[in-house]
Amino acid sequence: MWHTGSPGDHDGHDDDVRCPELGIEEAATEPAGTPAAGPPAGVEVPRHVSSDVVRVGKRLSYVLRHRPDSVGLTLDEAGWVDVDALLAALAAYGLLLTRAGLDRVVAGDDKGRFAYDGTGRRIRASQGHSVPVALGYAAEPPPAVLFHGTVERVLPAIEAEGLQPGRRHAVHLSPDVGTARRVGARRRGRAVVLRVDAAGLAATGAVFTRSANGVWLVDAVPPPFLTVLDD
Image (cartoon, rainbow, N blue to C red; front, side, top):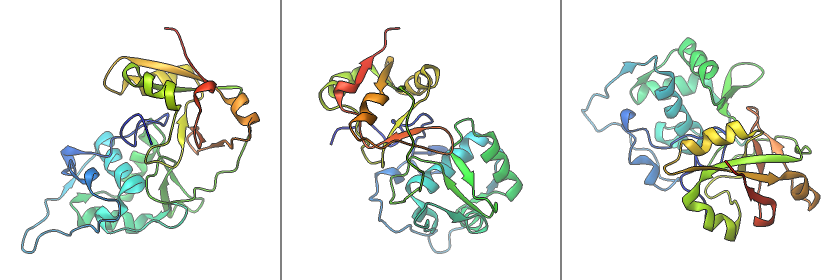
């Protein structure tokens, strides 16, 4: 089924599953069920402490959304993982991060991709998973209009098939034009914003949920509910 590109394309706060500066450029091409290989025997894993929120955020997003097995972790059914287990796993694979450092990444991530549970002992990605999880967000009526940022070159496919989730669990929609425009600007090509008739789609029985960081989620958006906004 068609989708606009990598798993990061559809949310209001996208991520790139590749993180070449952390040595996982090729990992995104492996099947999701491929077990992670540990460090080769006799080879010492390079270790570093990073205060780079963007870089560490990309690594966390990759692990918590797409490949927890890349560091030997398994998410629970709702996408949560124990914080101590996450920090230990990252350290085993070369990224030394303290709990205070993790707190800074979560608080400083401008996309709001990560959330702690009520105890502060577990963490998960707020949405955008390509691994099976049930996030448990309650259905709620959407605003009358939502928005989606993309690029001009994929408009013919969208016109034919609408918005589809691709490898993710849902299509991700932005609450305002500005957010959607920033999402589209992250892609290669001329950014465009689509207006989504969310109220009309909800009236057909489509179920909307909203993630912890304010991204609206829906299974798909058929072409009749989409309009390209003029600049």
